[in-house]
Image 1: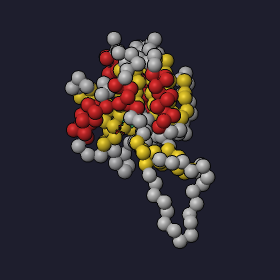
Image 2: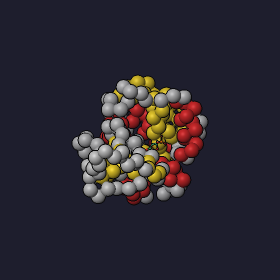
Image 3: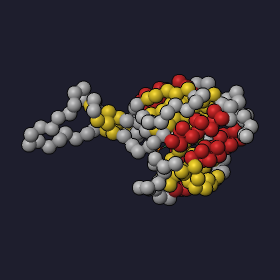
Length: 221
Ligand code: C5P
């Protein structure tokens, strides 16, 4: 049995994938299952933390002993995460947040018009929640962790992203057609703003979660 090394700590985890609605029945979404975020929430609770899990469109049951806040869009996820982060020791952004959303929402279902080409979908940028959390920390000692899915030049792209986002740790996954999304397992490298590089061998998402909390606890005062 592990020591409750997160006892007295409040941690916030985002999980799942945002959905950006086009009309009442359609959305732009992604393939994130939420399993890695849920594994982070469960393991943090098992280590004694008070956990707020901000879940975007996951079909997973609420983990025991965790406060779950359900959201749909990136804008809703931002609001829920910023609110929970106000008194948090650590924030882990495991959710796949849509970079863009449709500029307009059609109150009625978009219809096809006979003999006419469809209207283009115009996108606008969503707020970058991880960058915002890192830049305007609710507490100076707060540890902020991001996730990145990369298909090529994993380490170089990961380093650049860590700098761009301004977070303390970035968990970099290599993704492809049959890897990571929806799977029970993961393989990653955790990059630290201090230059550290922690490889995580292929294994259960729980194992990666434990390593993330090890690295977070090292950085907490
Ligand atoms: O830029 P990219 O989407 O690859 O970054 C991934 C990381 O940034 C994840 O931790 C994700 O939760 C976070 N993110 C965010 N807000 C966005 C896009 C991504 O917080 N709009």
